[in-house]
Image: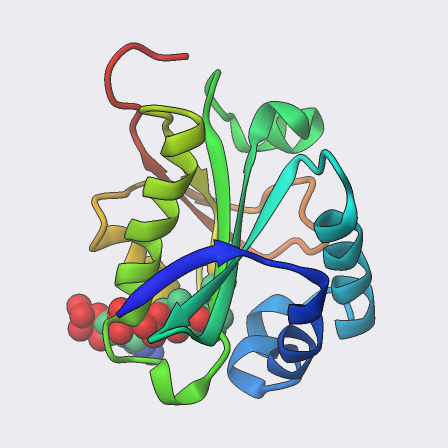
Amino acid sequence: MLRLRPMTSDDLPVVRGWLDLPHVARWWLADTTAEAEIAKTRRRVAGPRSATILLMATWDDVPIGWCQWYRWADYPADAAAMDARDGEVGIDYAIGDPAFVGRGVGTALIAALVAWARQARPGAGVLTDPDAANTASRRVLEKNGFTLVAVRPVETEPADRPMAIYRLPAVGPER
Ligand SMILES: CC(C)(COP(=O)(O)OP(=O)(O)OC[C@H]1O[C@@H](n2cnc3c(N)ncnc32)[C@H](O)[C@@H]1OP(=O)(O)O)[C@@H](O)C(=O)NCCC(=O)NCCS
């Protein structure tokens, strides 16, 4: 069964290996390099108070992917470009092990990630922006109740491609 746990620096080699695989690189390395991505991840995992929380996804305790969440308010320029609402959180995710792609695990991963973020931020809305061409990523959001807000470039993203902005509304009083 799918579980999430905090990422540690011991997990970085396996994440580094996944970044090189074509199904991940296509979306995660479209505008950056594996080295830059791992350096950023290393800082966030090691940092005592990182604004971005990194998690490993495991299946029967074996790592199969990773994900992260953050408060948009901690990234004000990005929040403005995304039209984020007060209190909303952002998410990013990937299944690294190709054997686990396309079997419904990504749908479960989104549900687990939203639940994890809402443990820290009860009822928070979730706003995220996969590449508009990333059909599988869009579907797993839709299957978790996210609705499409807009398809447009986001000016703080490194490239000018259209992104598909999806929102899962806040539950209960907005915070
Ligand atoms: C995106 C990702 C998390 C989705 O997880 P997954 O386990 O593969 O997805 P699921 O099996 O739960 O669901 C995928 C859905 O997309 C659909 N889908 C996948 N590829 C598709 C395509 N090329 N065209 C149309 N639909 C497609 C599937 O049919 C399924 O929908 P359905 O259940 O309605 O039939 C995973 O593929 C992944 O990590 N990819 C690489 C990294 C990545 O893209 N990360 C997201 C960056 S924003």
